[in-house]
Image (tube, rainbow over all chains, first blue to last red; front, side, top):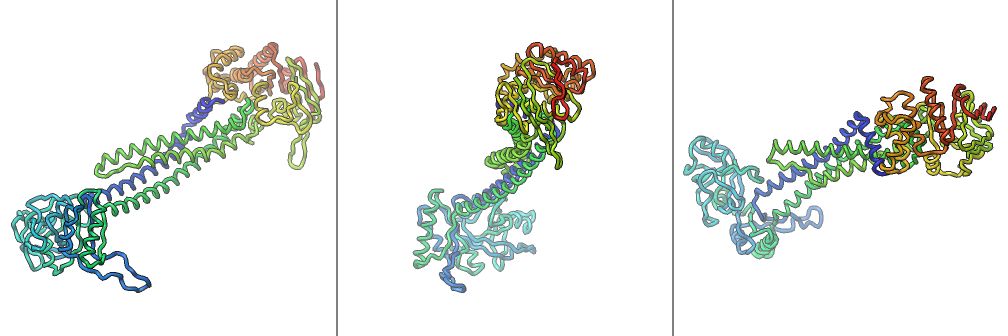
Length: 404
Length: 223
């Protein structure tokens, strides 16, 4: 039997039983669709987090006081290093590294802010003019913090959009006094809405010079130092420089933790990758279910076509030829189901992308290829038993019209 | 051409052994026209299945063209069936989803002939059974007699030596039945060995050689 004829006969059987074929296509395409949809969701989540990290700015190195690891040798042992504050001088010293372009020391606290008889509790963030540069923030009105010496406590502030409407209403806030705790400072600007942003809710923050926060909260140690490397290649260099500079200033004690944006992103990337693959695996179970269904349907097909098989044997069909015919039929069902599944999934995906263009909703190519392959392999694998059963049919019984 | 020697076929029914064929000897020469008759359960269908290589004897020998069939494996049996034997059944056994041409070319498809090589042979077979104008009809669009003609065309398309017919007129009215028998006799005149199993004496008595089987043995053999 020629390959072409085998396909022709099998395909003839596929289109001859439209209800059966339709159900098979539905089952397989649901399986393929599930894999594509779930992996698309995983990818979308990864894309969302990646995008959020981009709002941190590019090529960011974050310096935190203290080591995250302990030197405990036995339970209850003391933390290995004594924590030394990060100071403004430390921050300033980092600029000595040629790999670092900007630094922004950060102190974060919480305080009551008020204007007239309106007041609310909010996050106070102390930093410098470079903070807005690093995070690529834009202003809705006025200007960001002035470029002054780090430890100068100029009484000025920049407010988020929500703070502005809650405390100033429709009045123009620029140049007005805002009371923070027991002190007050003049509003120089209002931040534009920055969209998704992590770590800080841009709309509900009051930003003041870092020196002013030291005074306000009576602290000298910094919460973070945000540094921006000159380019992507020098991030590692910047990290090593930071450790070296701080270590020298802290009398040889490496009592800081330095995180690069890349490392964090990579970690998240890894997590989402695993997540997406796990989702794909779960969805692939539905493909196996579809395979079992193919097996059932093929078994029914075999018993329905017992006479036909008997006839083929009388006409000189070999065991292998019967197996080939039924396997080809199962493969056709699986391939058609896979194609239908891919087609419908991409239609849904295009639809979702049309509705929510801001999200990256697209399954990775490996999911499409993988789902299709698994569908095909399942179809053929679960077609083996029915095909062998068909080949084992006794032609005498079959031709006499009795079930073997 | 066909030589059966001490042929036995036993079936186990419950805890009882039934001898469907009991030491049967038979020689059929080329171009012969043989009818095999007998009451139901006499073993005539079993004999036909063995002659068609669909079944194998429990004991005894079957030589087809001087070759013993006892040692043949499944694939070899299939190949001999394909090349040397044509079957015609009582219930036609056409594949319902295929039209006349596709049904007729099935044996050639299984044999691996190319479509170009099949076309002429199918046309010739259709011509011989007088159904050239029904080529693209499916079985459900054909009358009983026409279906059996398609089945005969399918049986002869590989140009076998033997045509085995199992109650070929059983599902047909008298007139179509006669036409079918005429057709098969015509083929026999052209050189095909014809073996017809039937319990209809009107059909059976038309054969030149009439074999009657009872209880798995040949009772009468009239040349």
